[in-house]
Image 1: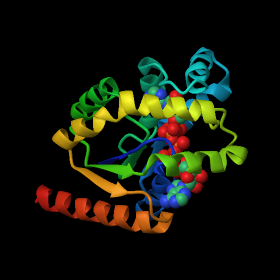
Image 2 (image 1 turned 60 degrees about the vertical axis):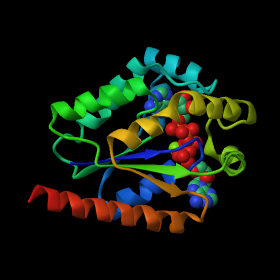
Image 3 (image 1 turned 90 degrees about the vertical axis):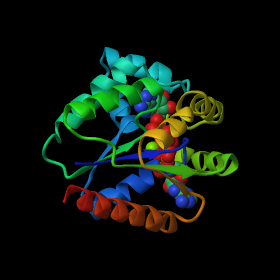
Amino acid sequence: MFNIILFGPPGAGKGTQAKKLSSEFGFVHISSGVILRETIKKGNKAGKIAKKFIDQGYLVPDEIVMKELLRESLKYENKAKGIIFDGFPRNLHQAEIFNKMLKKKGESISLVISLEVDHQELFKRIIGRASDSGRTDDNEQVIKRRFVTYELETFPLKEYYRNKSRLVEVSGMAPTDEVYSIISDEVKKRLKTLKVDKR
Ligand code: AP5
Ligand code: MG
């Protein structure tokens, strides 16, 4: 199975690019943010806890994230040809658990795409969509906290993956289709080398 991680700060375009990859390559798109927002809608205990953290721009506790994500990914076990993980893993602990889960299945991370976008542009994008995103965390105060959380907890994962997996940095500053064309080429290249490796 082709496992790809889309990595990057809030507003970098992870969701946008994941959707495009999913439609071209037929990969399943798993977004931890989307899953957690669905959990909130259910109104159960996990959802209530998740809401508290999301609405303040902090990471939702790992136990909740892992449980919800596992439930979702089990649906596709042995069915998908690839999975795009958007917004997951988000800290070192999640990355370690994820590695163990993949190892158990005899799988690994095929590619990590890190979307690079400057701070001013990120802010502009999220504020730009705030009026119609319906997201309670798309407001100035919470965005600032999401950025700090990213710097403190998620950004260090970049070095982790640079040392452990195939990490490719892609500028996410260009228009969506241009960014996509680079990502799509990277995926094709990786798919090709993996086929060669298997011979
Ligand atoms: P999550 O839902 O993952 O949000 P995020 O990481 O803050 O990122 P966004 O979804 O806001 O941005 P994106 O990178 O997907 O960009 P998008 O394509 O939308 O997480 C939300 C919260 O859930 C977290 O803060 C945390 O509390 C919790 N959470 C989630 N996962 C967790 C985990 N694993 N562990 C613990 N907690 C977790 O694009 C943004 C905008 O820019 C859009 O309007 C888009 O149209 C536009 N745009 C995209 N690309 C371009 C481009 N190239 N040029 C111009 N505009 C563009
Ligand atoms: Mg997103």
